[in-house]
Amino acid sequence: MRMAGLRCALAARVALLAIGFGVLPGIAAAETVLITGANSGIGLEFTKQYAARGWDVIATHRRSGTPKTLAEVVARYPKVRVETLDVTNVEQARALAAKLADVPIDILINNAGVYNDRRSCKPGDDTCPGDWSTQTFGKMYYPLLDTILAVNVKGPLIVSEAFYENVKKSKLKKIVAISSSNGTLTGEKPPRPGAIFYRTSKAALNRSMQIVASSVKNDGVTVVMLNPGPTLTEHQSYLRGEYKGMLETSFTVGHMIRTIDKVTLAETGSFLRYDGAVEPW
Image 1 (tube, rainbow, N blue to C red):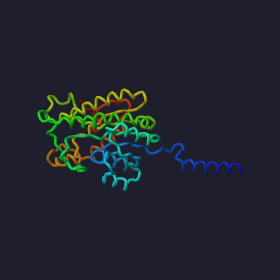
Image 2: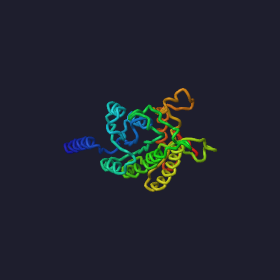
Image 3: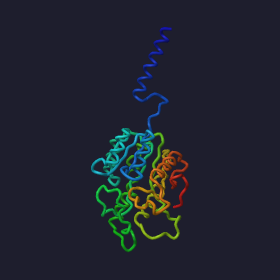
Image 4: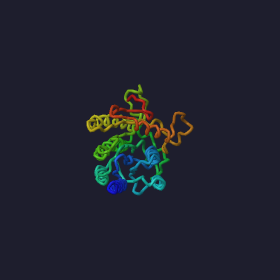
């Protein structure tokens, strides 16, 4: 009886130590999501909603200091970790990946994007809509094309490759790229004029991520592109009340999170609407 009691006490002590070190079988570690462009719009809403779920959130931005929007989220959700990342900077992405080498990333969300010409906007003014006209044929401002392609196409490739080992060692193994129906090749005939740079970048993003999907499928990593729909982010807030089809950011992000939850390796390489419906492109 005495030996049995000692064995029980020893087992209980080992169990307590295991809990302390987070290694008790059956107790899963919290999932981790990394979000680029997390300081505003869709990225900020992803940050808030995953944080509210109790996830470990790595929220990245390219500002020189922590944006007020993210500081407010961290004050409410201490599990949110804010990191600086310019998605077009290969060295910076690799350095952050090295810093996070021991952190499995269950879901990598490539959200950072450039929509239009923001030269007239004040630094940090996320409510400024910018100028769409400089992407119109006959008025094109070509340095903007370089920026849009760098952020919207090269950026997701840099980030996905830099953090691939983190994703591969995770439980869920998912890479997501936030795309747009503006990039469709087949869903709009004939295409309407305007926004040439942005729409071209989203078509290129879809194709590049399709190829990434086929490249990593054997590792069990799922890659999907999501269309958030016409979303009322800060940049589009001026459209509130003018266009009935606009979606609240909380609505579309909530649906995208549920879609991300459901996607499996069988759907890798797919372009999906926020609610999981297959999109033509």
